[in-house]
Length: 115
Length: 114
Image 1 (spheres, rainbow over the protein chains, first blue to last red):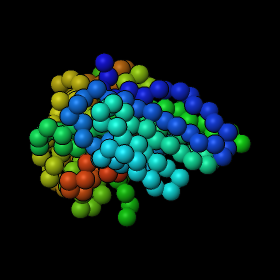
Image 2: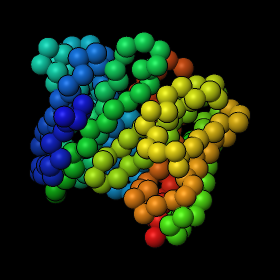
Image 3: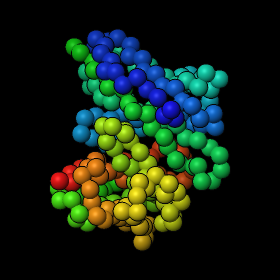
């Protein structure tokens, strides 16, 4: 079983709607979680990080973490066509110095926002 | 800031040839990461360095792969000999200090091995 799992989609939403992206992880020692956005042919860029249970909001983006359920989500409000990209969920296991920075990525969810 | 710089951006080679990918991290960053991305396997960490020292190379697929970081501003990933299954996009990323996840990715090198 892959450590970080995402629904590969594609997920298609109309402009102005809320896009909901989900991610589950299997490693119970994972402590930090991240959402990266990757446009086609480009490199990943960090858009959100979350470390504690609950919600974290940044502009139109909200990350949600539930460690008991081993579940992370990203909500994009008022979706725009420019949000169309692949969204990668990543987890960082923390079990000592050799684990630091070793991100495990999910396969990514392709999001399409249509006008 | 120029960001993470990688070269070449595209590489086409024949099976059996040596391939060297290059990376210049963001100045001042003390962590450097090499990733490989394919449709089948997604984005995988190959190896990462802290202050030029390799910390974890457990993601390096085979002995054909090697990576070095001779100084704080330069790293190489070498494949020798290359095989068609090595075809992928190779990303270099760097980060500053204990800020796991805030890794800044380079534009990547698209490698095709024929």
